[in-house]
Length: 533
Image 1: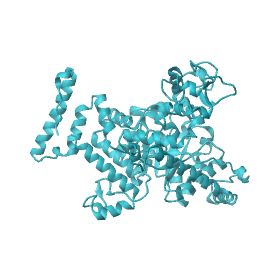
Image 2: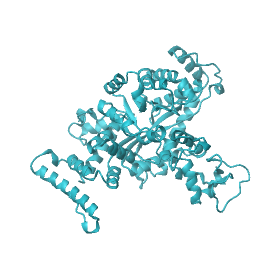
Image 3: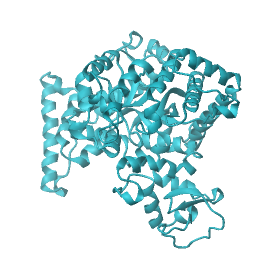
Image 4: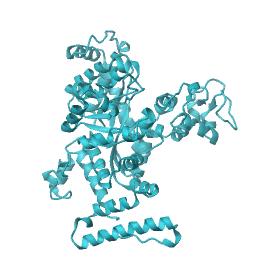
């Protein structure tokens, strides 16, 4: 199909761009007539993308519409934009205020008077119901709850993007923790706007302080015997009730999100088409006993609940407790990975760079995540070049199919790593499975489409390469069931679907695989997308 544009309403530059695009399509049409492969839908789409590559507006529109498999690295609380938190916190029944001194949404102090024209710049608390009606307040709060307009300011103890980024989570914690269902719905709606099939949001489903259960013993060490003894102590002191509570939080949040979007009704929102599965998010900056218990909690939930498909580990990798206990943490994950083999494991590892910590801390984190914890995926993996024998490690990751979740904007904002400094092209060249993800799109003020655009602009990725990343994200997701692909490299489907997705054999196969159904959905969307050009 050739789209005809009225050139009389365009500038000369726009006319030339349109003509270039039309000429590319005409050339492809000629290729189709002569029997060359250039007549395929993929080739026509590729040519169109190359014709508009230098126009950021047109490529944004193209990539926003382009089907994207999954966002596998997104923290639920950090994914939601500040404006949504401001709206939710404005509920007068919550009695929440914005505290300009703390630059946070907090529980109101007593006797906070209503304000007709708050500016949110003085030291006086402002009711969120008032702040949400003030453009000046909305702007100030948004800047303090995200990276928007951030400039280093030593007087505010924020000397870098790293400091600002990690400080934002506590600032919206008073509302984010109470709005899991709303946050999931927000995430699904935003993904639907970008033609994303699947999202794996990270959520914390409970906090465990072993002494409150009556477990006062300390972790004696990192051997399997030591870890098993501590696990038994927790189970003997009623740990199961915490698993039940966490599972309820998960299921209620997921059901609440679907209810808000009208899923199952006659008029479901587009967000209902987005599949959501949770990763249990444990915190690496706690005492080791608490960390062990929280990791155990999320493993046990993921092992029994369909809506939870894996576990992860979060918080700044360079904080002193995270550095001190790193090797112990990897042993804890390795212990539970061997115990719960079907639960997916993705770990933040290698989110470090020169200036953030000492060199010695960057020489083994990714390796221990691979060799000791037994990860399926690595989150970030930025400092791979600093690892001892990094070449062999990269080769092993490629051979074993250990994927890396690439977060381009996040790495630039937090670590200052971008362009040629980023290992993304190194992983690509070595054959390590990679996928693009957002990390915290609300804090960063980005979306998944912007990451595809950055990958194309900075590293020259073609449409076909971007489509491969899209497909690979579903291939490496933790969705249950077998993959649609017998051989992902050649896109050879399993035998049951070799004659088409509509056959009875394929339908039976898809019935038993959430992953394969999502992959078929992506292929269906890709076919429709490519038919446009």
